[in-house]
Every structure is written in C-alpha cells, then in structure tokens.
Length: 306
Image (cartoon, rainbow, N blue to C red; front, side):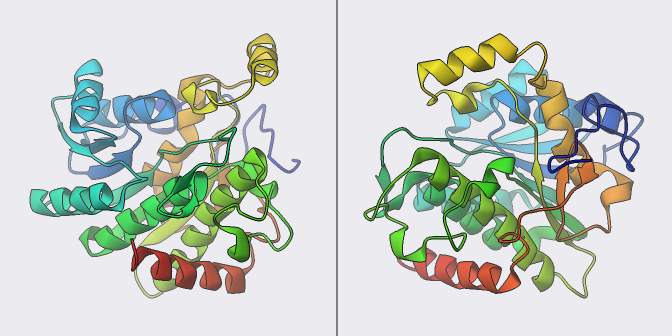
C-alpha cells in the first residue's frame, strides 16, 4: 500500500483516501461525549468541530483566543460547546486552558491535538527554542499531561502528526540544536516537531498500559489549508495547480482524526500511526522507544523552566 497508504478504494478499516469526516462518524450518537480540540477555528479543525457537534458531542473548542473559538462554534451553529483560549506557544496560556477545562468538571472522552504551524521560513525562537518544536510539541505536551487525569477510563489522545515526520535530521531529534543555533531548515525542523508528536503518543501509550486509555498519531493527508501559509510562492502555486487531482478536501483531511477519536474500531488501538483512517507503518525513529523516552524526559525539563 506504499509508505502513506494510498487507499483510493478502502483499506482494512472500511475507509480510505476519499472517506470524509461525515463518512467515518455516520450514524454515531455522541451526545454523551466530550472532546477537547485544539486549532478548532480553521481547516480540518473547524471541520472536526462541525461534524462532532453535529453528532451531538460537547466540544471544548480551543483556539489562540477565546473569541476565535467562540466564532468557530457559532459558525457551525454549535450551541453545544465551550470556547477556550489556548495559545500553544505560550505556556501560561496553555496552563490557563488546562485550568479552564478542569473547571468545566467534564470528563474528556478524547483530546484531539490538531493545531500546529508548518515550515516557518526563518528561524524563530520561543522561550529559547525553535518555534515549530515548541508550539507543535511542547505546547501539546503541557496540555495533555495537564489533563490526563481528566480523561475517561477509555479516553483517547489523538496527535495530528504528518508524513513530514520522515524529514528529520540524523538521529531523529537534534537535542543539541533545539534552538536552531547550529543550523536551521524549515522542513527539517517541521519534521522534527511532527516526529515529536508521534514519539509523545508512543511514550504516552506505554504510560497508559494497564488502563483503557489510548494514544495514537496520524497523518491527515495533504490538504490546501492555511497551515501552508508560510510556503514560498513557488510551492503555493504548485499546490494550487494540482489541488484538483492530488490534494484532499478539508472533510477528507479531517476524517482520520475523527476516526481515531471516535470510531469503535479504534477504541483499543494504541501506540499506532494512521493515515486515511487506517494504520500504516511509521519511520524507524518514530518506532524508537528509547528516543521517545529521551524526548519525554527532555520535554519535562523544558516545561519545568518555562
């Protein structure tokens, strides 16, 4: 099926490349469920918000500001939601989000870590660390570890990673260059942040052993959303030219995270990597539990200082 599993038909799950968020949740009554979703206000996050609330779920909708989250809920006519601010690049904002979610008193059936940034053209630092690593990984690390105790007994953690996780430097994670001072490449550092998402899910899945909780990562597909706003003009033009024959629609892009978060068939799967709503192989670095453990320990060190 290839590295990224081009299920133009259907894969073992019964879904594939062309499946949409509506398809993978069809017929589900989620009225007794609560989900936390980051990046709720655009792209596949907004579509995930749309379909899960349409199925009756209560969404704790997180965006960079509470206003943006509230507008996202309003835009999909979702009265059944709670807007919260969560600026992943700012630890104080993430911790305030954790507190706000705790104050709702709601048990979480899943945390969907959907938000992220991609391919910043110039090295940008946040609290002394490269921005993509800090936002995509450290921000979600603070969020999820802060809310683990609020997960239900069968709660799921869903990390939106990318096939870009294969674009990593030698060794997978440059622990001696997390500030980019020894060299910076937009795509390599994006890949490092996405590999970190998978390694986090893998290590979390080990910590969940003996419980009914799960942690998985996924590649949503190649989608023309504002995530790619930092691409140069040549890449933007190329993406636009092939969009009709290659890029997924937004509902197709949202399908896999919806599948992993709510579908009964994924309820007991953990430590895996999905694409097109099917499990696929991950890179050798992503399979490295020692690397996952080292990253977890480094992340705890970073978080203790910011």
